[in-house]
Length: 110
Image (cartoon, rainbow, N blue to C red; front, side, top):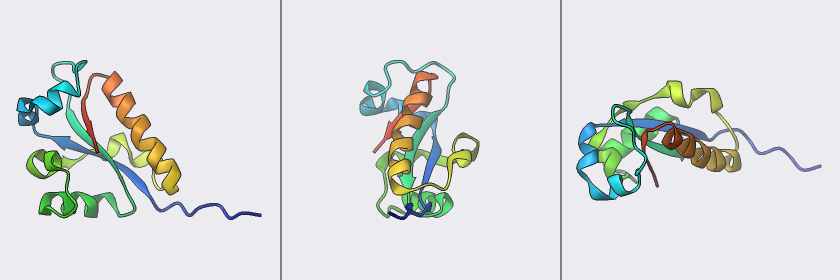
């Protein structure tokens, strides 16, 4: 009987500074953005989300938007899903990004 994969991966959401909206790439990825909603980055990691955020900010395997504009983690948007298997985290990263974008958020995903 195959073993169930270990649940040690996480999805996470980083709030981005409003200045991210000045970047055309970000605006083009969010045609349905609703004024006043947060700008966020949605990611997945095998690390603790706090450690992963620190790595982004330090420029280690960093997303450029998170490195330049990342403000803080928004655990209320993701902590109920964690931890999970790698495959579940990969799927949840996409699903969470889609759900937030449909709610009017400005979303960036790697």
